[in-house]
Image (cartoon, rainbow, N blue to C red; front, side, top):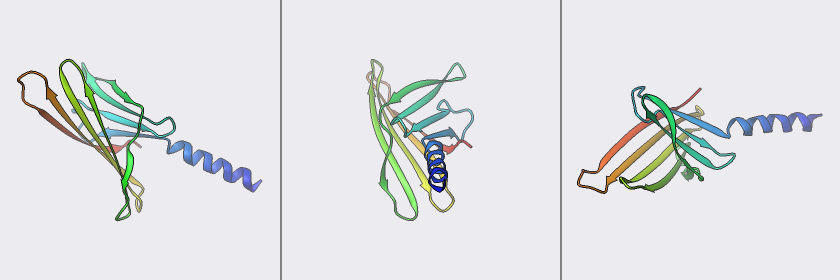
Length: 130
């Protein structure tokens, strides 16, 4: 009986940590959220189209742990998307503060247009959705 109970608690614990939904700190931002789904190794990036959040990119990888000093686990992922308009580089970071079990996220988008427009850099901060 103890093993079954322990298994259920572990299963529920791993299942709830399988998906991290980060919401933008600024409500009027064009990047409302991103989702890291560790159970199927995908990261989803949302953007607002006509004021409605829509799925914009899905990547088949998740941010990887790169630093765990100072009781903080830091994760990072960089992806590059190239289309007819621009080369878009996304640097996705999130951190877990182990003492408080709090998450914060950060995305830096670098948009390098193929025409004469200047390069655009967009930085957004996120918090974990409750």
